[in-house]
Length: 259
Ligand code: HXC
Image (cartoon, rainbow, N blue to C red; front, side, top):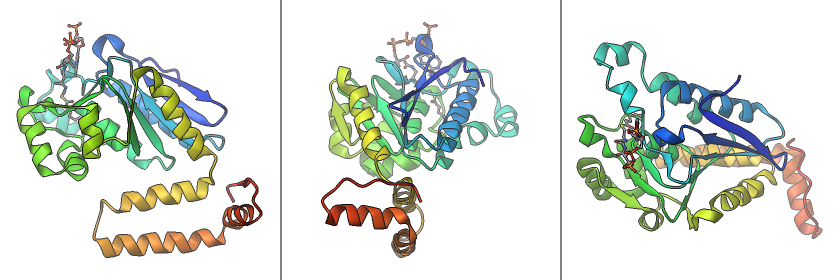
């Protein structure tokens, strides 16, 4: 598939990089863009050489939200019939390899929600997160009212969702929305470093770890603990577990075969 609204490339034969590429519209997330993004994510997920994926925007905007130009023409029957958001935005939630959002500039509305659908968010110092949909007469529709309170709590979420105010990078770090904040010119290097580290591990344990952490956000604690324990047990059937532990005991680097 030839892409019009995103760019893709591979770093070090191991890391898939997707760059949102509608800079003039601050990477407004149109349906065609989201279809391309879903396609690229799936292609990297299915590529055996790829261990992790980085999703980035431009310096000014990770993404300033769903495309308001397009949405301004929609009425209820359009969005309901087309299953708007559900049909074209959810692919990222099916990706089994870790996806790292490298956020510079605005991550607003659907842009903030897209970042929160990723597994790790690394922000540059100029990053700004917000759910300003209230100013448009709507509410967040891709998880903003659900994932944001899980990350930063009810009070801060209510404030952002009801007033449309933004959260800066340092507050996002303090509140646990992002895991690292770095200077803008270090953002890609930092994300790539994390992606390469992840790629050096067994894909089996990486996928199991991601699946297990995500389980913490669904169901009860005891269900999540049970799920984690069974995945943990199952990894003892892999060659990579033998290799990882043998390498540690013999003070050498492991060679994982993803088996
Ligand atoms: C379409 C957008 C856009 C968007 C910016 N642009 N955001 N176009 N959809 N979400 C366009 C502008 O119209 C403008 O086009 C160009 O990008 C540059 O934007 P400016 O506003 O001139 O830039 P600036 O003054 O620097 O302000 C930046 C900004 C502002 C604060 C980010 O653009 C802004 O408030 N954007 C909208 C943010 C928002 O409300 N997002 C939530 C969308 S609703 P022209 O042609 O004039 O140059 C949403 C719903 C999610 O996401 C539901 C489920 C997904």
